[in-house]
Amino acid sequence: MSRQKSMRNALGFEDVALVPGDVTVNPDQIEIGLDIGEFHLPVPILASAMDAVVDANFAIAMSKLGGLAILNLEGIQTKYEDADEILAQIASSSDREVTRLMQKVYSQPIKENLVGERVEAIKKGGGTCAVSVTPATTKNLYPVAEEAGMDVLVVQSTVTTARHLSKSYHGLVFSELQEQVSVPVMVGNCVSYNAAKELMETGITALLAGVGPGAACTTREVLGVGVPQVTAIIDSAAARDDYFEETGKYVPIIADGGIRSGGDLCKAFASGADGVMLGSILVQTTEAPGRGNHWGMAAPHDALPRGVRVKVPQNSTLEQTLFGPSTATDGTQNLVGALRTAMGVCGARTISEMHQTEMVIAPSIKSEGKQLQGMQGV
Image 1 (cartoon, rainbow, N blue to C red):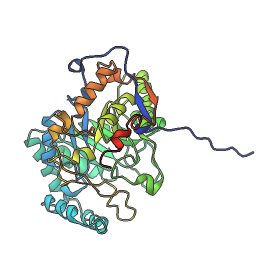
Image 2 (cartoon, rainbow, N blue to C red):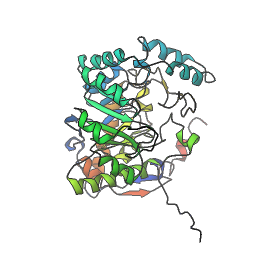
Image 3 (cartoon, rainbow, N blue to C red):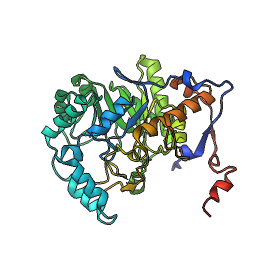
Image 4 (cartoon, rainbow, N blue to C red):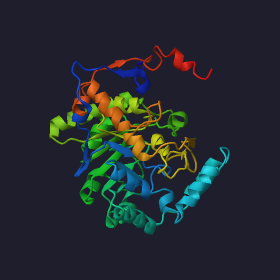
């Protein structure tokens, strides 16, 4: 007898809204910090490990403002002495040629001396140094970065699980890695309860949730893989809460991708995130090395590119994007102010209380009563 496959509904940021609380809180009495191992971040915002977002100077600036930027150790910064020249080539390339150019650019080998130099530059500038590697290169690169003084190791791929089947005799085992590395280990990405729970059971410090929602990512178009971000965060957070109840160890969930505005950011925290990772919003800052261009880590894949170069206006500074004052009406500036205000309206004094905020399914939340906005410029 055949069994019919069943499906459940999944929700993204555009599908939901937050319900105001019965009690409101003054925004300046709200605590929004994030702990990743021994590191306390006053601002629970991470900059994505993408070449257009983070270089050493950006990482230093982000640290000084209370957040954390993650440097891609397999990208342009560790392949070329003059990374800015390569970034300029990508920025000036035509849409037709840019993917081919990036495939050529990224085909160059990683230079271990540059790995150490980039980490040392961040540390010398007074920044907290977080670096990103893929599972395939972790064993070779993390010792170099650790010797140079890295503070946080991020092992990241499009989809990461605790169990991986391959012909390799002995692949990367997160429980072993955690014992070998002296710094916090953040792992991603995943979108399901089971994958999140099993990754936590390996002893990792923090977990990235999200597959395919990023502005420059085309994983969902190319592979058909992904879960809308609100559901992905809720399921991953449920695993975190169960794991904490069982072990007493709290593994923060970082919502990675799809956050285009302060409203999306606030919904991510209400869904259960402890922190958020941003890409395209931060590319709009003058400190970002992408010159108003943004592309995903899988965009230059040599056989199956899964990303597109996105152009955004560089119309803000990093400080203005995080703290304001905002001159934009689209929610892309003063993200910390938006979070504090939303938490105050929802009656949440801490991020953990924000997790308890009531959410409703509301696909019309952005269009209800907004007819006159839609007529602007007509």
